[in-house]
Length: 258
Ligand code: GBP
Ligand code: ZN
Image (tube, rainbow, N blue to C red):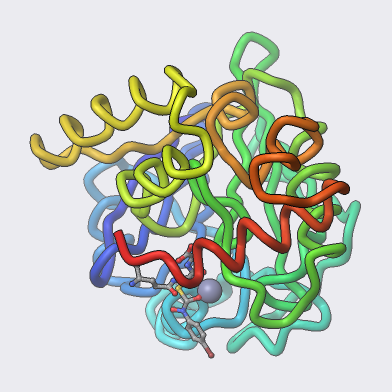
């Protein structure tokens, strides 16, 4: 599979996933459909499916438009997430196939919104998988808890997503990496992996390049929200359980002005 970034709005990303054998494609959160269809055309790809991560307008807001531009397109979204234009409601564990050799597993990852879905995509055996995490998991961060609890985010981030294979590439919904790593350093000032990745991310942005994808392995080393099982992290934020530490780190981030 080939995965292309499509920067949209201020700091959102849509992604085009192309099954190389058939040139059939899926698009994640096509908020600006014309941009996505231009990229598809340039790459000779035939867009058949939309994967919506959640109902917020900056993710689902292009669904109605893309349906008029691509008749017959299927629009997937969470079954309890009021996703605009949704034709196929997905629950945890549901599977979708794309083209000849690309397979998708829907993971229910609630908290940012109730029906948020992350899409885990596998291609040929020698390719590392990819996961599209919307606003549940960002590079070195996580989404605000708009419709859920710390317990739910713990399950979504620290159980469901953390259990994916380590080489899985992580594609999230926004370019927040630099700010997230700056905040991460306030939680763990001595974590050299965070400092090193911050310098790299700043350089990427300076040259106009994305900081995405990351991998599950990298996130386990640098994302403070995914490190709350570590007693030393719990101690740093004055908590004595993982869920309590997650709630506290989210509160600190909500009030942090970098
Ligand atoms: C920043 O740091 O760059 N602009 C600020 C924060 C996701 S978008 C913007 C912000 O709050 N972003 C949201 C988030 O979860 N951030 C994580 C963090 O700051 O750590 N959204 O556009 C947001 O979900 C939205 C759309 C929200 C409709 C509510 C509705 Br209703
Ligand atoms: Zn959102």
